[in-house]
Length: 146
Image (tube, rainbow, N blue to C red; front, top):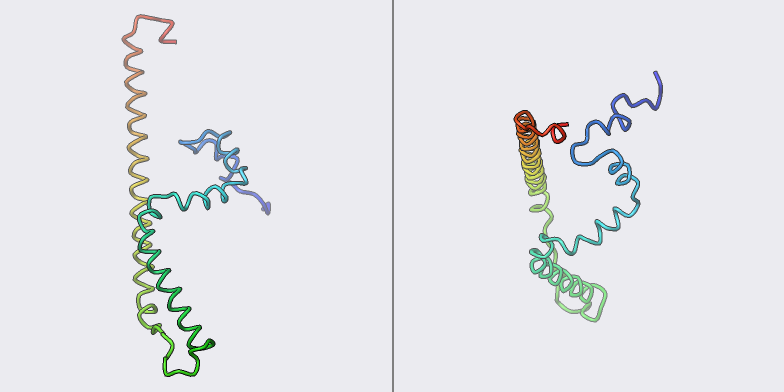
């Protein structure tokens, strides 16, 4: 058996793509700036814009707690009766499996919507091709039929 043999891999990919042609796919795979473009567009996404106030509030509170703890433990408030602020780890530990399941369900739902839309687009494309084929049968213009 050959070591680097991919039976249904990159060479047959040009026959399986419905959105990209093979040349488009090769060019897309060869682009080196995809990561830069993706990372630079994160701050312009609709989700990031909608969550900006909440994330800003959590970040501000986190910075204030960090500053307070630093002043109490290492700074000028070190010898006072003030205690550092600490959050118990148990609620986060308990909620991690539920969060993981939620992310899996959301990913599966998104893939289901994408798959459904892909099937709808393929069905629409087939119907359009059938319509053109039927129209070509009834056409008297032999130049247009060919």
